[in-house]
Amino acid sequence: MRLARTLSSVLRRTMSTLPTTQRALQISEHGGPEVLQFNEVGVPQPSAGKIIVKVDWAGVNYIDNYQRSGLYPNKAGWPLTLGQEAAGTIVALPPSSPDDAAYKERDFQVGQNVAVYSAGAYTEYFSAPWQRVFPLPTGVDTKTAAAFTLQGLTVTSQIHESYEVKKGDTVLVHAAAGGLGLIYCQLLSTRGVRVIGTTSTKEKAALAKSLGAAEVLLYAGPEKEDIEARVLELTNGEGVHAVFDGVGKDTWELDFKVIRRLGTIVFVGNASGPVPPFPVLRLSEKNVKICRPTLVNSVADPVAAKRYADSLWSSITSGALKAKIHEEYPFSAEGLRKAHEDIAGRGTTGKLILKVA
Ligand SMILES: NC(=O)c1ccc[n+]([C@@H]2O[C@H](COP(=O)([O-])OP(=O)(O)OC[C@H]3O[C@@H](n4cnc5c(N)ncnc54)[C@H](OP(=O)(O)O)[C@@H]3O)[C@@H](O)[C@H]2O)c1
Image (tube, rainbow, N blue to C red):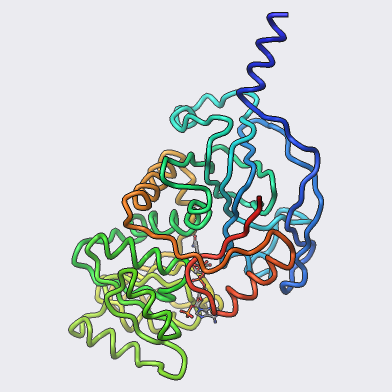
């Protein structure tokens, strides 16, 4: 009798009742937005090292397009559940606590609000390795967390790992009004970095300026500027200390022209297509460094990952980082199709999120 009571109390602490089926946004082949499907799938069961989260909100990221189209080929098997980040409530913990100080430090509890950065997020019940689950502090709700986790961890880690920004630096940020771009504008300007942004429209430029960019130049559209000349003019002919480039193919050659001697080009993404191969000797023109980081590697160490998450949450709770949500989309194939078309169609600013519950 006492054993039964103890078991039931452990179960209450480690999981709440789970349904047997749920819905997930998946693809069974690479292709355009039409390949997105809304399928009924099983609900994950508690397993070693994994935490199950009932999802409130999921974030849409440009990487979804690469995974759907096949630019990043699927190596995990079909069907593939898309989505890289979500936020919601813990409904089940691993059956036995991992013997790891970093696990204990996160102090996971059933019922706690958390953010998750892990593959396969577009589900109602998301099972993720505990290392990728981050408890939310008071002042960060699940909607805000879904708007910031992946992009915020990327910026927070890259302004430290790829190029350690310093007060007084001048940095160029491409697509400055996008999801990643607005986070760069805010986090860099609060660190005393002068941000020169690029974008495609005057409206986007005004938004990036309102969130911290000192100058925003138009690299596309009818009022397109000569970016090389303008950046050199704004930096007394020296160029910028670093470039954070998520556009790729279309801005790649420009980056070499506007980077200063000993500067760092941080190539973070391929919104306009992947960059071509290049001769390494080219770096010697100005002794330039080039990084091609991906968040997976920056958060591979759970201690570093928590440090980045804590820094992100404190930027939000201090008011240094404000969410700019472009649109909330419904959790359906039509909802995600529209989100994918919108983000690839270049008409969005800030973050796109899916309302899951
Ligand atoms: N390495 C990592 O770990 C990591 C993590 C997060 C994101 N990323 C990358 O960072 C980039 C930004 O991601 P995000 O999710 O924040 O997207 P986003 O910036 O909100 O959207 C992409 C933006 O890229 C610009 N763009 C320029 N040329 C384009 C083209 N030919 N087609 C479409 N867009 C074009 C557009 O802004 P304008 O209209 O202003 O040009 C567009 O709004 C993406 O390349 C993404 O893959 C990388």
